[in-house]
Length: 284
Ligand code: PAF
Image (cartoon, rainbow, N blue to C red; front, side, top):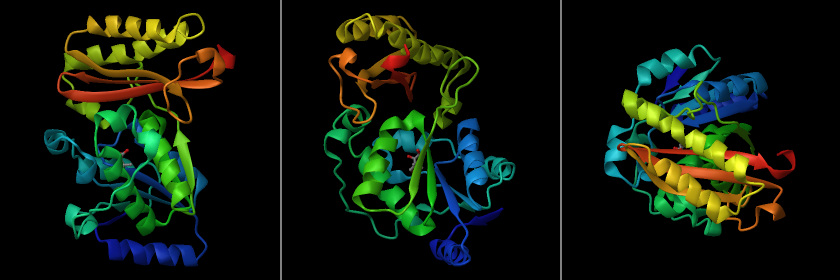
């Protein structure tokens, strides 16, 4: 695997690969790789001739300076892991390389970013859209792989791809979980052992809500989840929403829906975690 730090070097490689008819799979990440990322990379290696991964902790998508500072950075370990999953190129640029000038570009995703992560992390999706657009232009992938754990990010990137006519296929891969259900996340590395145990309650809350969907009203499910998580030490619920699985707008009548997403965000200590579950109402 080759590690590339310069945009110009990667552009030259991508041009040559495309000229020789190679299909490129791309997995954008912020590093601190875990099994969730590795499954995306393995899928890319299976489905494409060449796999490119980026590791870049993107400053413009953090609306909290300490979250950016404390985001885990484990490049040496990431390189070792990437070598085991068939990754051909790692793009690991500096912030100056990606942002030679400060970006003043403003994206707006309308209703899609007015809820959940968009509502609670102002500017977050603008930063995601800027960096993902830059990466798509530089890497020019045929397929790009994202994890369902960041469900709203997938919806935003889907809208970005459609609106700006990026010529690529977006692949959304299911959430990979630890044995006790906790969704894998680079941020889990920041949890203490006790917080790590408390964090498993997020998935339990999603399961509890999913089981109630057919026979309880949404306000009652929300109240139950808030009360349940309210008893967990060091856990501060930020939002819990039941939304249309595609538009991500809150639903009022579950019976009128085919598929809903149950979405949650909470602080466990200082660490902000998100998770979600997509439920097909015809299957429960
Ligand atoms: O999901 C992430 O890790 C990031 O938001 C992404 C897509 C790599 C953009 O910085």
